[in-house]
Image 1 (cartoon, rainbow, N blue to C red):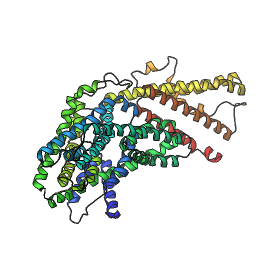
Image 2: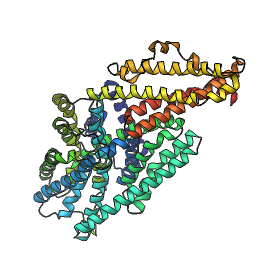
Image 3: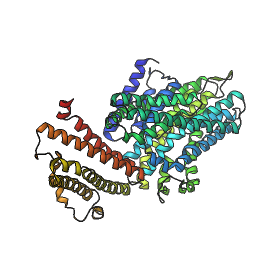
Image 4: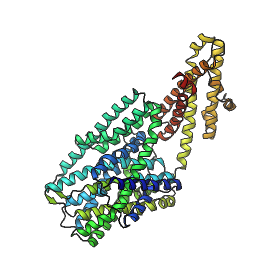
Length: 572
């Protein structure tokens, strides 16, 4: 494959994605559809990409980016539901597909049929998440879909390796498969935690956001390769490291967070556009491989459609049969008592089973020969895998918005809860700022006298409390009275930032530079106090991760504005 052809594929896919983002269309689906049409144009080259490149260079950063932006607390709270889909559903789907394919191809060993089952079992949440965000799916639904996609790849790839071993040896034992999977989970999670902790410690002591971001870019590859080298799950190592670093990122420097967010967003659109375009352009060549083989195109298409139908139907059947397990509450999960999916939400989840990058890579990685013999029905298996990927992306992806609207699944209540949490948190940060100012009373009193110190602290505290009051009234007017003290005058919020200009001085005034320097130091301390409040309320469950990150970004931008001020440049 010539590098110019790959560049053109990526560039074309990104342009399509840009047009989709501008119009609010689901980019993955449109890219697949256009790539499929383009693939039938004469003289379009065959895009043969080494499957190891996709598994080792495309999959890790996509998983890591998704894990970074996921909420560890939400992930832990929904762990039983995520495991039910990310492990149980993958295994059931793989076995169901394998049985259907095995019944259609009697001469094929069951282990070879299970290879196909493992290839098509894991859904990819990218397309579903794009639709869900645009239509406002509830956060618990989005958490379940993203959490499932973070761990189902590990389940399917481990099963894939076990099935390949069965094809090569002619026999395999269930006990060996369970031990292989258990070892992969333990080692993968262990490697991810160790690497995440090491990277976090480096970031805490590294005052260079560019270098810290570079280390972040290397982290998913290091996690994947090291875990795979010790027979662990590279996927779980990447996910674990990403969840750990995403959860602890508020304790690192603000500049690193501001640097990393656009970097990962840019990398995501490049890699996602590339993989979905690759899915679309490869189907005609897979069909030609079946024609070139002696397996029969008509039979291959019939079997592929049967496998597609099985893959689509198994998911809703499994989700509704096992829905009672969604009501379980694991110890320490902090999951609300009535946070289970409704029947309508379960229906949406059951229809969000689009396949993606792992199906593409695993299908391409099926060896031509194994154990010295040709792989049984390889061309037909690959055709079935690509049919499932394309069929689910187009059939389910295009109809998912209609399903969501038809079932009227939305997140209006969630928006109200977010507003209430933010209002309460802003009041709590104002109280924390007041306590921080009170802690400086003795130092300021020694500098300017008790009366002026009292006056300054009162003026600053009143300004912050009034600002919190104004925010609470705007965000949650229904409960604002419950949050605010009775003696608070909301009109104080109109005073602006003037009272925060500087701490007191001996003569009541300071030269401009010195006044600004002291004010800047005080504002940094106040930002740090507010940041601590956000993390404390997030960890205690009083503040949702999404709301916390939105408010944290405000503080990061304020820190950035202080660093970019004229005074900082003069001092530097």
